Structure formats: C-alpha cells, structure tokens
Image (cartoon, rainbow, N blue to C red; front, side, top):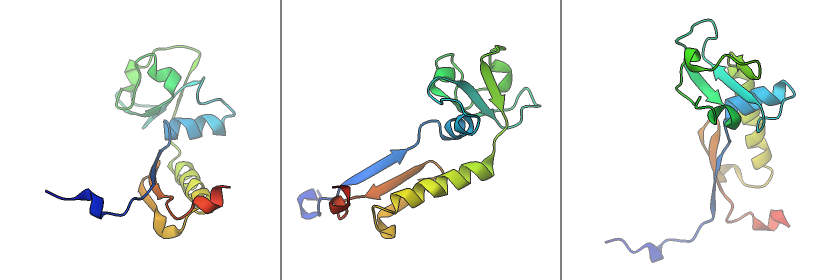
Length: 128
C-alpha cells in the first residue's frame, strides 16, 4: 500500500478545449461555436469520410466525432468544412503561449493539440 500523504500537494489544471477543430473553424468564419452547427470532416468530397469534430449544437442532432459525412442531415443551417490543420496547430501554440505567461515552461505539459495540464502550484501570486 502506498502512503499518498508522503507526496507534496500540487494544484494541477487540466485544460480540454471544447470541440477544438470545430470551435476554431467557427471563429475563423465569424460564427459563435456554441450556437452554430458545424462539422469538420476529413474530406468533404467523400460521403464515407469521418467527422473529426462537431460543435455542441451539431452534437445535439446526433452528429459526433467519428460520424460519417453521409450521416449529417442535409440542412441549410449546418456547415460542413474540410480541416485546416495548420490553423489548428497555430491556435494551439498561441493558447499555450498565453498559458506560459502565468506558469513556468516546466509546468506546462501538452497532451494533445487541444489538451494540456498546468501545474499552477507555484504561480498563484500571478493571479492577483
């Protein structure tokens, strides 16, 4: 049995950016990611292509990551777009740079393009 009381207490934030590809794509188009129905599809020219990301409003219609293009309802209020991976990477890096204004580089642990962990234990003084 391990005694966890022997470990130092740390305050760790887990940042998981909501429907990241879809949210970035909405913002690029001047749309609200929380009210827009948008799917980022691997290849919009192939009906069997996979949905890489969907906004929350589109998820309410049953379209989610892993759905197929042919499963998306044909409606005028649904946007279907190809991915813009370079832009997603650029935005991810920009968000990480914002986090690094508040924590030391060794306290940022990138997990994926839209998820990272921040150890804020030694950074509370910056949040006044």
